Length: 249
Image 1 (spheres, rainbow, N blue to C red):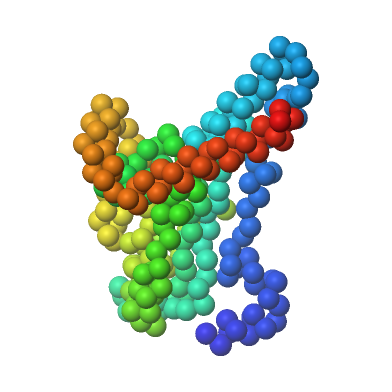
Image 2: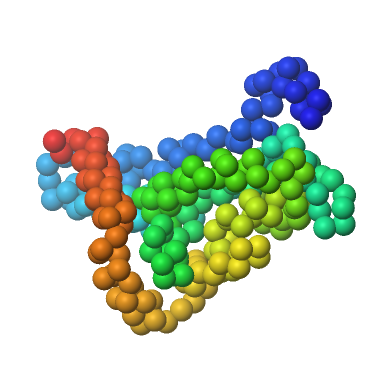
């Protein structure tokens, strides 16, 4: 622990990426309207290109793919974050403790996925990702962190970061909070299972039937209504600014 603070004192900026995580520039991975051949010209050809561009941006926002995506895969980063503490593995040895952070949408949606055990692998865009991040906000996690003790139980995690690295030790309690889709559909610690993850396959009729069964429950859930309202407002806000940026106002 002393070495941790000594390193911070020796150069906080140098330690930022290691202890706060790397930054991710979404704008660099999204094509500009110019790249999409969009313009404000008042002719049918330009209008067709503009409509095609808006469709591509919408696909990026919802599905995470499409012609507007320079990367060709859902946007976001994955990395291991050093905590400065230690944890204890099953053999009794102590290791530097890390957190695994995944900012790439998996298709899991708050409330719906928890209620149905169903993820939506085709919905890995910025909007589902934002909704998923909001759903992960849990004030109780702060208290749980204190209850874990100084050297909580941990295990070596095989999930890879953006650079292909893995094998860092992560506390079992932190692994239990990770999305089951990161593990192919089943969290190894909590046992929570999601079907329909991005790499999996499931009959579309099974998915539709599960959604139909849960809709009446969700309609009575005030929190679900808040999410629906927020989702709609976010879509309108993004489309409004996209249209203004391209000179249609």
